[in-house]
Length: 153
Image (cartoon, rainbow, N blue to C red; front, side, top):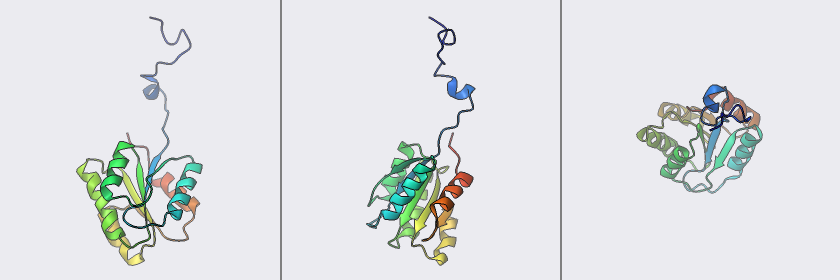
């Protein structure tokens, strides 16, 4: 058997540990519940993709169980939840609860949409790490992710 170095190839089994190669941040964008408005979620998904993140968009009408399962299956670093229908006080914490049950509570959860300011303390207490209100720029969200989300090991 020839040595990988002598034939000009790297040993794929060790290259990731021998080099300081950092994978891209992976973000799942999800629309929980019955909210049928997904334009904002699609815009932020595209903005994250253009900023160099890997993005998985789940589509409309996802249950918290589907979102948590997809996040684990896709090995994401963060979940961005979008809610315009007012069910964020149940849906966001439920996703976090399911991640904890599956020992995946190192996945960062953040959200955006029509979320009243008075709901922010309860969402923060539930484990939501950031909330973006209408009018937040894509640049603001991208910078927040770069500062608060790191690739999981």
